[in-house]
Image 1 (spheres, one colour):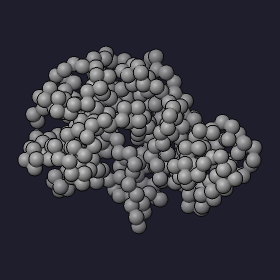
Image 2 (cartoon, rainbow, N blue to C red; image 1 turned 60 degrees about the vertical axis):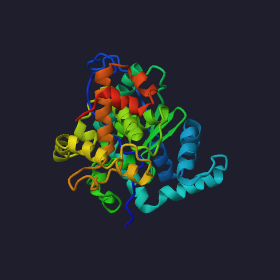
Image 3 (cartoon, rainbow, N blue to C red; image 1 turned 180 degrees about the horizontal axis):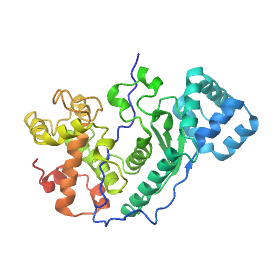
Image 4 (cartoon, one colour; image 1 turned 135 degrees about the horizontal axis):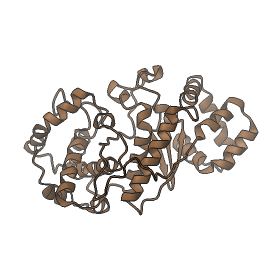
Length: 334
């Protein structure tokens, strides 16, 4: 059966300091983020076909409805009859309806699991806003896409498709995803993926997309920003690595870098070559033991060194789009 690729593969590393910022301890002044349960209201309507629920959903979540409809069906909300007819047909399909029911049960309101997700969003956005005062904080939602999207971002709204986070052992996943993808499909990754998607939307890539160094530095910046946000993500969790894979990356960092240089790939513009460094599949082109996203790993390590050497701010880091300058000033020599 066809294996779906995840839209976002995000990797974050934990610390409490960085970007010339002091530690903010236990986030005593965290701004509470309420995660809007669009998923629950839509399921209630699908399950009952109650016009009152439909009207309430149309009134309360017009932007979310429009985003989801466009993402799934390419249908404009203005054509409401066709829009809601296709929505009902889609989510009433037995397998998807069963998945939806499991999602609403697993992520029930006020459960420890969902409370932790809200806490992580609150802590993450509070700290990111301190580091990047010009960054707006979006309204946060959760939805069910039928295993299609991880995250939807538009304007001032962010929504995570939580049917992708029921745990790696969830039965339906086994037919659709590879083992290396299943590692990241856990509740612990909901807020992390949402925060990273929002950062990417607010600070899009402005380098040369098909140049390996430019792409590595950009990914390293995003990772560093999330790391500095101070949420309690371990390196292994965010990279979706086992202890062995994590140890392998650290032990072979110098060898990976030398391989890139020896193959003269640092400045390559070959799209196929560049893309291999940022795939979640094992990096067999480097070594039979190498995990995926080797480019993200090296990019983060360069940016980490750059920030230690220059002591610059996070905003200045994002404004510097000269990858060669960052590499030179980092004095990166693993």
